[in-house]
Length: 588
Image (cartoon, rainbow, N blue to C red; front, side):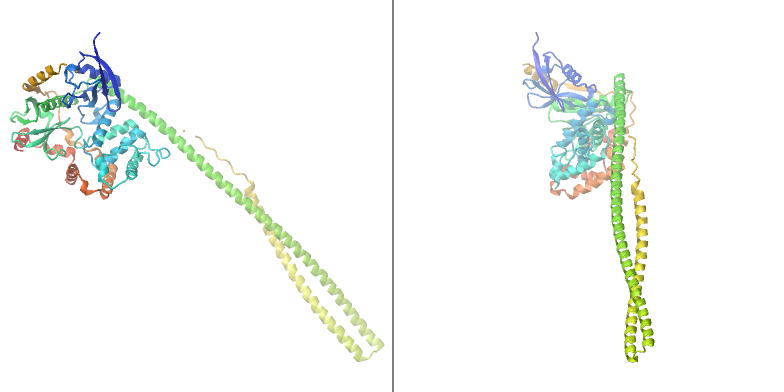
């Protein structure tokens, strides 16, 4: 039975373990990994390993795994990583698994500063990463401190600003709330659409020298080959799109590029080690192949994948719309329920107030009745007293007349009669004054009684008006509602280094209008987002430690001041014909 070799493959979010035969080639192992995780867009990916010299290397598809100087350990260690990048993530990345793996790798590159990202864009990207993990912001679930254990911003950004983690969380949360109703899968592609506009996105850098010995950086990406000054990896100075390159070749440390333009001379550069040229060659061939492929009609497999992905996303959209509709219905029902509850409480309060008013009116009515009764009794007493006084007055008159008569008959002495007469006259006068006083008092009490009667009638009318609305019950509202051959390999590698490697980069049959030069960065397409980013930049500038700015920060700030971005720079570095740019490279 053939001896089996154990291998562990680490993706960006999982670990896979396999066993394979010693004769297994790199392509077979890679296809096994892709099949296991359901990855079909395999042209973007590769398997990385650390060789016996500690260098990171890509597994070659057409060679046996065990003949490729993989570090001897059990199990053998590989990483599934993005090897080639697309021009436009939204148009080219089809499967959700592909997008997720890109998202996780790009996010890690940004957090480790492998890709430079300005602070305000880092905050925006962090919010999409939060959306991709937690989904839509929910105040009842995502309470203060919900991002405290998350790694969301580059350490450089955290160190450069006088902000606490809570303050960073507040700024990220503001953006997170903006992504309402966005699916997690949509958040990952939105993250990548913004990240692809970063100057270092998808660029592989190599140290080179031109004929003059000037130290430079060579950048290889999906669109072509660019030349950077040694001190600036953000802003290339010269660019050659893949459509202008006919052939690439290398021998030992020298790399030669043959332009398609006939009047343009070949140009060359030198690398520190022949191994570097292998990497440049692999990337050039792979990126060029994808460059041409993108400019041709999709093959059947890609068409099927796109159709399937479109259908799946449409289905998810319909499901999301249905959920949103049901959620809206539930929210509407909840609002109506709360409104009804508020109205019920208001009606209950009004009813309570009516009851209190009624009770108060009844108390006042009773008081008025009691007072009226007292006044009536007092009136009767006064009338009785007045009658008594009237009787006494009549008696006094009779007595006076009797005295007068007796005075005449008996002819009493005038002095005695006069005295008695004066006495009775005084008494009569006194009684009449008392009677008049009692009559006035009785009149006063009579008027008061009438006022009380009128007040009593008015109180009864008010009581009747209060009782009428309180007796009608409030209507209830209703609503409708949701491993030993290493020596041989070293010898083989030595012979390879001394040989010449060449690759023809065919561009026939494609139409290239360099549309990438006309692209806008994602944030400029959205006026509101662009304004919010500018406001956030101003806000973060106030809390920034200027002395902690990195070289890349200064380069980026200068690009912003000059109005440059990735695509404007691309147009600039491709100006003139190929010969002019080759001459410019040689003159550096």
